[in-house]
Image 1: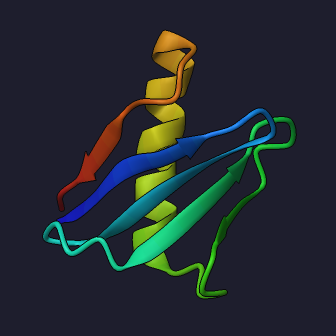
Image 2 (image 1 turned 90 degrees about the vertical axis):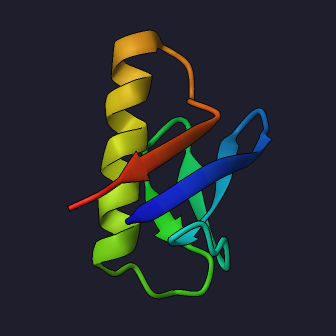
Length: 73
């Protein structure tokens, strides 16, 4: 299970801390204009991809970045 919670919703980007089983030990950065997504640690792995997809899906549905997200497989 990968979980994320929003840290900062700034004018140009939004940041989420995320990790496995609520161990928020990584940061995901999303550019609001281009939707370029990166992991702050430089490791864009399956966990980062899964949680960014959940965040984008929620954003498409509501028009806002969600306060958090959860991906369970």
